[in-house]
Length: 329
Ligand code: GLV
Image (tube, rainbow, N blue to C red):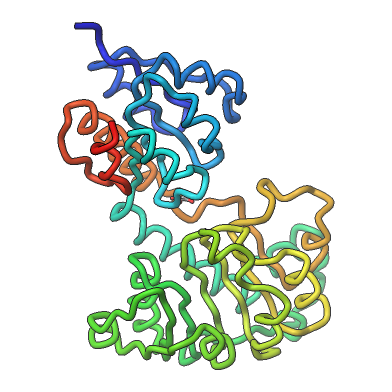
């Protein structure tokens, strides 16, 4: 029986997982540090049984409808907004992701962003490198306390909960809104439920976004929502850039509607060098690296490989969002 063919869309991110799969299957790896062109993906879905992808690979309905050999796509991410899941399901293609291995790293990073923004850590560092720190004077760098403040979490999944756990240690008051209420988080972490997102926006000193990007959450934070926040409040976004309207964010930050924002994700990505957001001192931006610790990237790679192996063997995948696809296959 010929060995299953696996196409992997990046070469350098998860070398251990690639070597592991290469020991078992017929593996081909795209060698460039950018997504493979669409025409190439179109060829691969008619020749390969499995693909291991990154969040910047667009796996849309046209591609999935054209697939003849593809049985499984393992996305090395927890977010799946780059993949058309209904189209995968109707074509009998299983989609894997990596929940449960990255939430603690993302929560560490979210807290890092919050502290760096509120206490002007990144701003102060920028000033030193720009040769602008010439006299001891703390006043231009006065920040805002994180401990004791109110943290609003929108989306209390694994990452939101891990952020709330850290907030407990900072004596923060935690309020949240989510698709589903989480009584166990409320009792374990003393988090307070709010029926609507608007209440969270109004009451929080820090608003941290943790909902997935879906048609319902696309540009969920725009001018109206930012206006609801306090003028002293900060927005933290480590989910997907497209949950926040970037032009409205610019307006809110530049006119003092909110005090600042720290964003690990932008719309588009990478953020263009001439994006007006980059002119603002009250914006802290990082290049989509919340999950990117060495340990977590390795774990995500291994879980993606395990997803592929399980799917090929016809076993339950460690992370699968559409097991119903099997019934269509
Ligand atoms: C990263 O952005 C992920 O979705 O895992």
